[in-house]
Length: 168
Image (tube, rainbow, N blue to C red; front, side, top):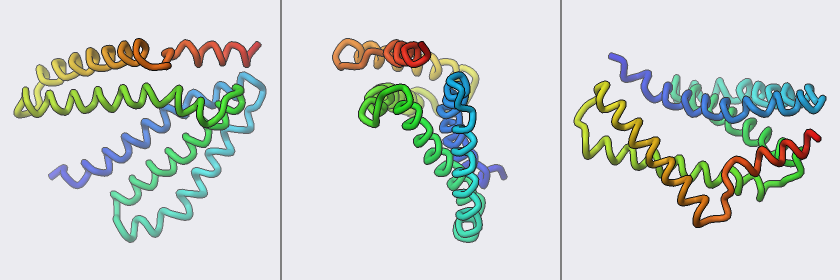
């Protein structure tokens, strides 16, 4: 009964993740007296949606529309992040390095949680939710600890320091 909405909701959650990552960019530019930059990314996203919506809905229906929203969000969100890093004095390599370790940590955490769900639980319940959330938190904490200990990753403090320098 509800199965047709599962894939579009998953795609829209990916779009929400992109939106969450990009939500921090607007206030950064506004605090530096550049409020005209974030709306430009919204215009680009609107153009992508306006051009692509009809063909993808014809080809893939609701899944295509949700996928296009996710793709447009990732394109504009990634571009906004790159512009923000350049504004802060960094470049593509620095952006990848500062976001790569958290992304890898998150991917490992997700795989651990998915694996734990497969081996520990048959269905969904409140108990499985809380146990899997706890497993996810522990896995992420351990991945961050490993990243800080054995790689050049310096955790979020490096980004905060760069923002402070740019604001000064």
